[in-house]
Length: 85
Image (tube, rainbow, N blue to C red):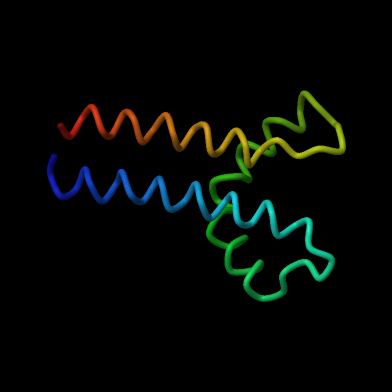
């Protein structure tokens, strides 16, 4: 596997973990503060398009965009793995 493939693979993995951490931080009473803002700045370009498409069809109180973003990143990670082998 080439260096670019390994970097892309780990980038998608790190982004998935950042989304998970940010999602768990929404359960904190303080909201996370500046650290949450940094994580939100990183993940918002990924989650925002998914959220805008989802709100056209659903209007529930639960935001599933982090879960869909993680699934999309997993799919892209597997595609990158197959392309760069």
